Image (cartoon, rainbow, N blue to C red; front, side):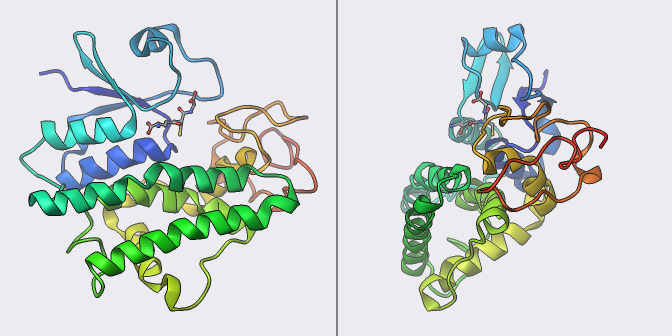
Length: 266
Ligand SMILES: N[C@@H](CCC(=O)N[C@@H](CS)C(=O)NCC(=O)O)C(=O)O
């Protein structure tokens, strides 16, 4: 049987969800991941597969069968490779898991809108909106597993969905000085978040990688778009992110050039 192919951007959080799930199942090789460069137009064959949409990941199951949207692909992988289930088996617990996952979209948007903002006057309101989401998650965890670490007894499907976003939000710590406020109000979600990010199945990306690659988001340019005055995207594969310096944090004052970011020879 030919393996399904997932077209993805290596640092994409939506793709990391699926990588984590496959790792939890011990099935990393069940799917072939093919890398797409987000800084250049999508190849024609890919646009044909998707019917013209550009967002990734996209799963090609062969024979004209194509799935999009990470939550849909995640569910497909869970159901198609059901010998090693990760989702809860009890219908009520599965409902609770799904209830938590309904927040993934608004949570993601809150973090991305915050990092992309360049209007200082809006910073406090954006921070408050993100904190409302953390407070909701905290209350949800307290209600369903007050003494535990994860939503249930172990890292599961809800954790696979949220962990990539916790990791992307390193860009908020770095560029916005964001931190969960000290104190009991956020302690339950703080414990969950820390355990999620430390889990062995979720180590596909690192802090410095996120901070360097997402510099352009921090100055308002998303999805591989070029910020003003720049020739090379911070998402470029070359030079490798490990060879680049940590970007400047002063995102409200200026946009760093290609050389300062280590994207071209200085
Ligand atoms: N809702 C989608 C979001 C996917 C998404 O935004 N992917 C980003 C990469 S992280 C992307 O492909 N952006 C480029 C584009 O939309 O053209 C999902 O869950 O799969």
